[in-house]
Each structure stands twice: as C-alpha cells, then as structure tokens.
Image (cartoon, rainbow, N blue to C red):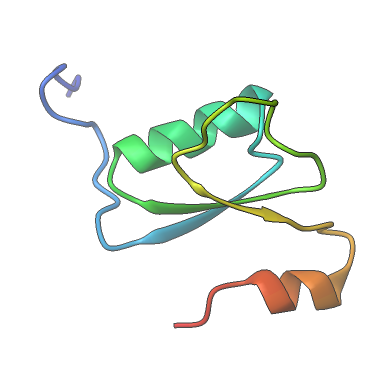
Length: 77
C-alpha cells in the first residue's frame, strides 16, 4: 500500500537510531528520514557537519572502528 504525503510510511516514534556517517550524503538522508518517521537519531561520524550547517540530530564524533569509543558513545537503555 503506497504511503500518503500526509502520513509517514514508517513510524519509529519511541525508538532510537544510530546512523554512522550521518553528516552528509546517504547517511544524512537516512538520518533525516528516520527522524521524520519519529525516531530519536544519533549520528556517529569521524567528520564534522559542514560549517554553518544545522543538524537536527544528536551528533557525536565517533570512530566506529574503535570499539571502546562506540561503547562509550552508545546510549544506554
């Protein structure tokens, strides 16, 4: 069933999503779509958001190849 413009196709209200590489490109689009569907979004990225660009998500500078850094940054239930 196709979604209508007035109602999101997915409902992630009450859920948290972690998006790696979410400062730009495909990762940013995914983070925006999850937030639009109601998710609380945390962006993990080694880069920084573009200067002057405003993220509506929680941004954390995290190198996901470092397990300790990921464990420290990951939200606890």
